[in-house]
Length: 301
Image 1 (cartoon, rainbow, N blue to C red):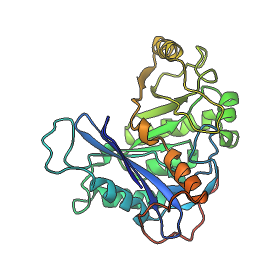
Image 2 (cartoon, rainbow, N blue to C red; image 1 turned 120 degrees about the vertical axis):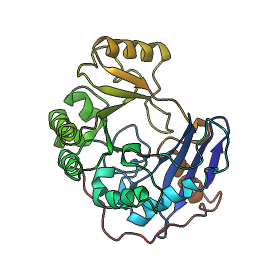
Image 3 (cartoon, rainbow, N blue to C red; image 1 turned 180 degrees about the horizontal axis):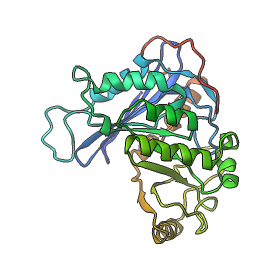
Image 4 (spheres, rainbow, N blue to C red; image 1 turned 180 degrees about the vertical axis):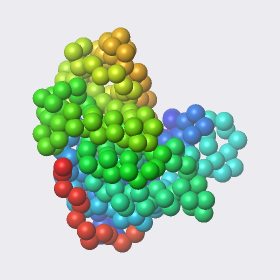
């Protein structure tokens, strides 16, 4: 299924794979950029309590071809003849922030990004790629050792282990100190700044005491998901949280909401399509990608 949000020029695709599994990818167009947000797994095994992608767990890793095809399909939605200064004529950036834990499928992801960066591929430079992770220390170090210039975004969501384990259950196997040590090692090896992603859940992790480490933080107000008990932060509380972070020396950016009318947040549209298909209200979306990967997805850390 292909949905388009005319209000902010965002496209979302739900793709059916050769084994009838479904994944999502998004094209975000803004400020002269065309950014592809792609998935790396069918589902997700990290168990973040607020995320629609992992509600049914992880099924498998995507193949290199399945990752690349998402990029090609999104590239094909750009307009090479555009004269609009707010739009790019081709893909300019990649964020690996779709379904799945990217570092749990790191080898195939790196192969796919190599194709995307090749002069005979999509010609997307390494510094225009951001890889997100919930925080797998050994895999963060493996990415650093790969010697690439990709940006790293760590989905932290909390300033202490007690709260983070409540929000991200796999944290009890790693812990924030080990994640931060690996992130610092990534910076030391690559020179690339690490960004910390922080989904703001109203009344849970948006209080003044939830600040501390000097860093660059992307705050992401939570997008509502049917069936989950969380809520978006109240605007006044969100601004108060931003002010507190900045007073603590933290560089903060609040992520813009894009594609809200088409369920563009990760996992939302796929979940709706699967529910509709199960109820017999409409056929599964027409879109085929590469053959399935028989290798099971990597386990949680």
